[in-house]
Length: 64
Image 1 (tube, rainbow, N blue to C red):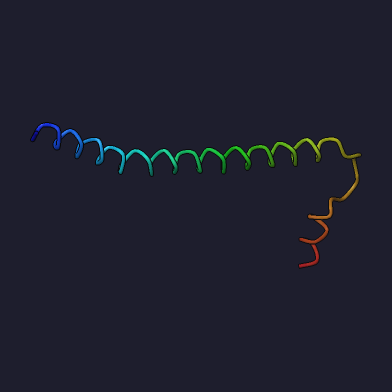
Image 2: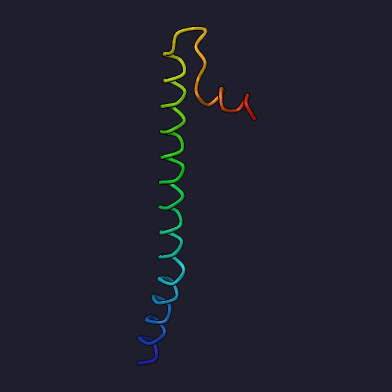
C-alpha cells in the first residue's frame, strides 16, 4: 500500500511541474510564432512598395 501512495505522489508532483511548464512553452511558442509572422508580413509589405513612398508609420514618427 505504501508503494502505491508513493507512486501516486510522484505522479502528482510530476504533473504539478510538467503541466505549467507545457502551458508556458505553448504560450511562448504562439507569441514567437505570431511575432515572426507579423514581422515577415511587414518586411514583405515594405519590400513591395514603390521606391520613394513614405509609410504611414514613418510619417507619424517624424511629427513627434
